[in-house]
Length: 138
Image (tube, rainbow, N blue to C red):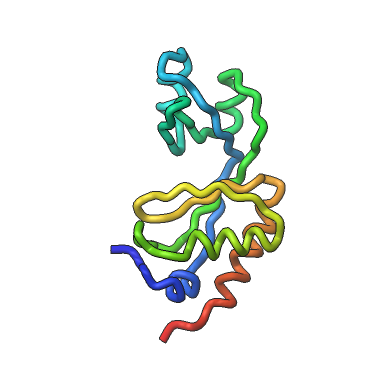
């Protein structure tokens, strides 16, 4: 069972950057590239407009997609409960304060952030500072 206490989540927060540069592509199920992309996608989101695959940038360009968002993938190394309140808001505020945009993906065990690749260092610094400011564990 994941953590629900925001103070504990922030106090134990560490962030790991997944190697590579990522891109989001949207594909209709009838597109010939669908199966190929589904097989290598790091994340999949089904929407009414099509299926969004998060793939490595080279995969996106190799499949003929123009890449307009080059992302670094950051994983929050804290096991937060899916119904925990406040972690996403705290992370978003920390990144907003340093002018870094963020797209959040929630997995069963961790939250994942896609941030502009050129802003990854600032994002990591901001999240490290957020964890350092968290009240200590009792």
